[in-house]
Length: 320
Image (cartoon, rainbow, N blue to C red; front, side, top):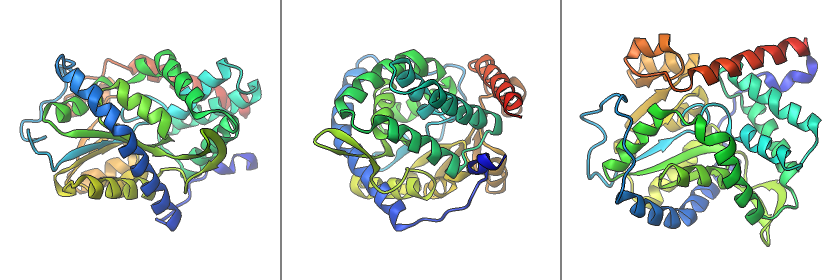
């Protein structure tokens, strides 16, 4: 099991590279948000109907509060599973890499689903794999492919309950941002497809429109997410005490602690404990049993999650 050393969680604090990654993500998000705002305006004419079974929030968000915004983690908060894995599946289908590399992506995803937490070293290992695969490819090429991959693997994995929460902020006239360690290009596609304002994500370095295989700073994970939210809030003139943040992982406690309205969505054990100690709001869309405890719907995605867990266990047995 020595080869699985990357499964062991390690604590990391904010570093200069975290700040660099956060600022780079905020800058990239602002550059892409103008186009997304135009699309949002078009959608406003015929808004998507919120999930009627989602829990009502009569006091929040506050309609017309433009000093407030919402920040949503992506993996297992907005979408079942890890975006980087789904992206990897799509690239494998298009023969970007070999079968053994797909197995590596599959095992990483299986562990993510089985353990229910994001380990920083584990997630960085997945992104290192992705960087080596996209090196030398054009950014425009990956964006086009990313649109196709969203339709093939991601669209059906969006949690309806979380989607409804995001829509509530949009309906209140607030901006809604994804904040994720996934590549900014992938995150931007997902944000646009969901009608959100934009996305903060890991920024891969490119030169003349071609990926170099390196990152700007580090993956947008843990403390780097908090730095990105802080930088974007400053640039947008937001009052963080009036903002909301949503995540499933204890790794995002730095981001959740920045805002006045933190939510634990499908929380891992550590985040659930932390949230209960601080009286943060919780939502769990994963199973009927857990949903019953908080009075929310969970029919969507239960079968998919059960299948994912079974696949994870099967993979684990084969590796033993």
